[in-house]
Length: 290
Image 1 (cartoon, rainbow, N blue to C red):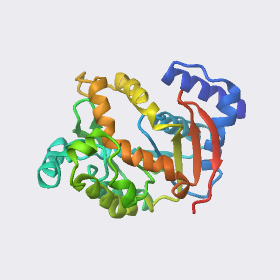
Image 2 (image 1 turned 45 degrees about the vertical axis):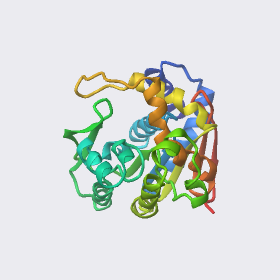
Image 3 (image 1 turned 60 degrees about the vertical axis):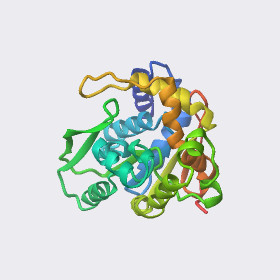
C-alpha cells in the first residue's frame, strides 16, 4: 500500500501546486503526519499555522488518503468559513473598534455555530450544514455545504487554531503601523485577546490533538499570501483581488498573534511541522505540551 499512497500523494500535490515532489520527500515528510492521525486513538484534530503556510493543501491530502487507503471518513472544517458576515463585522466595528470590520482576528468568527457543529460530530447528528465564506467578496454565502454521512475523524484548520491568549507585555507592544496608528488605546487587541482567552479556548479544548505548521519566519507570509490571493476563486465569479499594498495592510491584522504562535508554539501543540520559505516540510516532531 505504501507505494500506492506515495504515488497518489505525488499526483495530488502536482495537481495542486504544479510542482513535482519526490517519493522520498513524501515518505519522510507527508506519510508520518498521516500515520500520526490514523494510528492515534484520537478523533478530533486541530491544525494551525500562518496564512499561506500550506494548511489547506495538507488537510486535502490527509483527508483524501485516509479515506482512500484507511477506510475512515474524514470531516474537514475551515475556521475561515465561519467568519462573520460583512454586515455583522461592520456592526462590531461600530460598537467595539473600527478594525473589527476586517476579518481575521478572534472575535470575527461565529464560534457558537462552529462549536455546535463539533457537538453534532460528537453525537453523530447529521446533516451538518456548513457555511461557505467567499474571500473575494469578503462575505458569507447564502448556500451551505451539507455533510450527510457520519465521519470517523474531524479536522479543523485555521490560521489561529490552537493559539493561547497573549501576555500583556507582548500584546501592548506596537509591532506594526496598524497597531501604532489605529489601535492607540489597545481596544482592538485587548478585545480579540479576551475572545482568545475564553470563547476560542473553549473551542480549541474540544480537540484531542493539535498540529502546528511552523513557518521559519513571519517575513515569508506576505509572498505566500500574495500567491494565495492569485489562486483565490470566487463562488460568484467576482474577481476582486487584493494587490500587494492592500495585502501588506491586511496581514498586519494577523501579525501579532502569528508571531506569538511562532514564538510559543511548544506550549500549544502536540505535533510540530516545520516549513521552510518554499512551503516545503523540513521536519515533523512530536512535542509534549508544557
